[in-house]
Image (cartoon, rainbow, N blue to C red; front, side, top):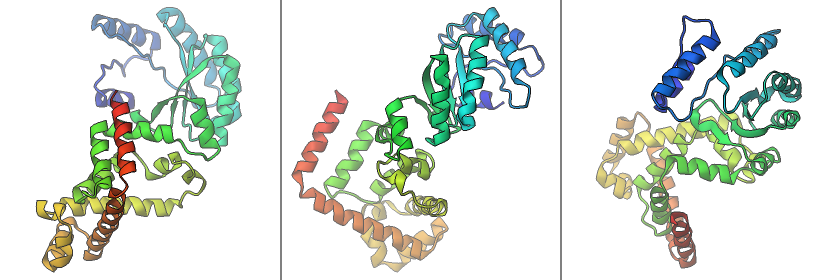
Length: 308
């Protein structure tokens, strides 16, 4: 069911059966259907085995599937949380069917993850992808340097930039940064920033990608409070009029606006004041940056190179 939901979410064709218990029969029917529909890439996912003594059954199934289906590539999905135990599993799997590439799941940049990656070297197969979460966007192309940087607490700036690009076009990114650097920010700018961060996933995961930050991460409780505040600010901004979005200063001048926004967003007047104060600080910084023409020039050159 979960696999079907994921396929529907990203709009790719799916085939599966709940009544049949014969994996080879299901796979052959699915393969035939996908070939009829001229699907260019077909992925056959086998059921996992988690119980004690179930590995032998999986290996026999894998060997039979490989013989009947003759796949172009066999991808071995390995749970990184098992650490060095991965070596034995990888060796057994490789003896049953040649592994073309490996996907490491639950890879969080810990020592266990590093141990698992070192262990699978026995297969001499290339690690193609890693999974760092449960969503489709948490599947990443494996890059050794980036993973080592995570283990050492050096962050993953490249990964962070890739994640940003998934949720915003270069034009949208350029608009936000230019607004900040030219002193043109308003509540719409802040709203775009917060929405982008919230779409990128858990805040703790994003912070780990920032160089230097992964060594001094705030506690889980503090991260949750920050996420809660960001969600409050989204609700507050959504309760503002177009005039208030462009001129947040009006909110402080007229108390009726302050009370109306708080009531409409289900927050307090103190929450609204805190957001307005954040806007004022950001505005002050942006006006200071506006005087630095060299920064804006470098930014323009950067986006021109991205476009080309």
